[in-house]
Length: 486
Image (cartoon, rainbow, N blue to C red; front, side, top):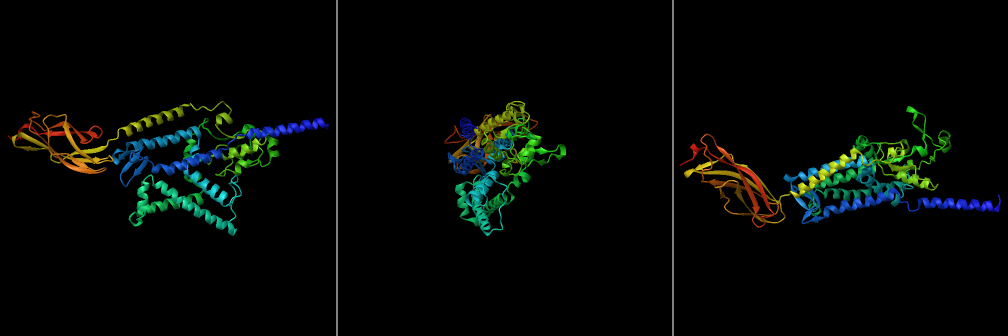
């Protein structure tokens, strides 16, 4: 070979290397993106219980105080309609997310996955070196070595501490943080709280350290539900058999043996680009081979896509594994259709529920009133005076003290005998009042039967009647004429 030819070959090799470097230049692995999402979710979960708006929490479901806080609005247990809409929004949202992006929740937002990454990748691998590298999640720790036994114990202790933090954070959505720490100062008086805290923490230790990804595969019902929600346009982790080649030997029921050598794969698939390097297999946290196709164990973490991108990128080629749909990659029938009827139906349902949630939140009342008639329908006094007795249960759901009273609307001639004047109620307080309404006016001329007459009770805070006011329907029972005393 002449000197000029050698120079040309060297230039071509240098250009090829440059092209390979340029191919991966600016590439951000999915794992890095996931870590940023994990950090955001963790910060959000730790901060939300502490956020208050107007004295109320951003989100709190307190069984102790029988209150539900949402976006700074406090709802009584009798006003839990917004919670119903919130739960519907969550469940239908997960279904919609699955139909669009597969098990994206599992790989990118599920606490189980986040906890496993913290324990396995951060504590065991990065901090203690129990695993050789993060990219090999199939590596088993040699527990015969005393040093590894000590490291394993340290890892469990560290995770136990974090488990108590996670358990406390979970409880803060049900017990306000400021009260949580006050209760812990007197544990003997709050044994249920302490028991739940310890129970949740021990479950997290057992789950993350011993059950591991088996929780996702065998325990979590979501993996079984997903197959019903998938279609050809669902975006998921996909291996491209058209480029990589069919890595199975045999046909039909014999399609269970995988090529272990590149030369054997090329013998049956001359155009196959898969290197059979097994990088996508060793990095999988749920121990599957993505080249087998869709599997319920896949959590869409896309670590296999990162591994394949690194390997194929070094050759100047795109990854054989991508986040796409069966229609686009395997069947090659065009672009993924995100505007299909199923997705539009989910989005429509979510929009309706969201509007209903906003309307339910906007209908929040700053006082509650329940009205019940007494067992005695009426009492007739001298002179044709008729009395009706009621039991009014008032509740101040505002954060401030107010004075309350009410008036009768819809029927003229009704006067309030009892209570005679407004009464105070502290924030969150309840009061039961015996209410007597009286009339001396002839309301009905009916000699055959008693007549229930509709009335409206307008109850309000005397110091803020414009904002704190409720209306309730009831009846005033008027007796037949022959019962009236003269």
